[in-house]
Amino acid sequence: MKILLSLVMVLVYMFANAEQDILKAKEAFRAKDYKKSYNMFMKLAKKNNSDAQYSLSLLYGYGLGTNKSFKNAVKWLKKASANGNDNAQMDLAEMYMKGAGKIVPKDEKKAYSLYL
Image (cartoon, rainbow, N blue to C red; front, side, top):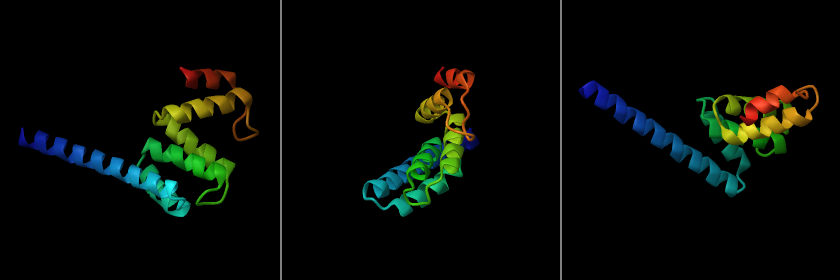
């Protein structure tokens, strides 16, 4: 029982820290410190945080805090989508619905599967 309680406490602590880190990264973004927010989101995204992955896709898409890269924007958008981020799924579905060049070819079946 003590082991289970300890495990729960560790998980709660990890989740709370991740949420605080996301908030700090968003604060940096709002302060227009894009490089700092990019670095913070990247650290969290590598730990499979879907909110951070989605945020990275936007930073790459607009070239904020990093070089503009549609390829990297889509890469992180796909990761966020696969990790259940609703915003990423909707954005990616729109890309598949319309097609976005070689990186995201038009594929209505994929689009519909993401809408669901």
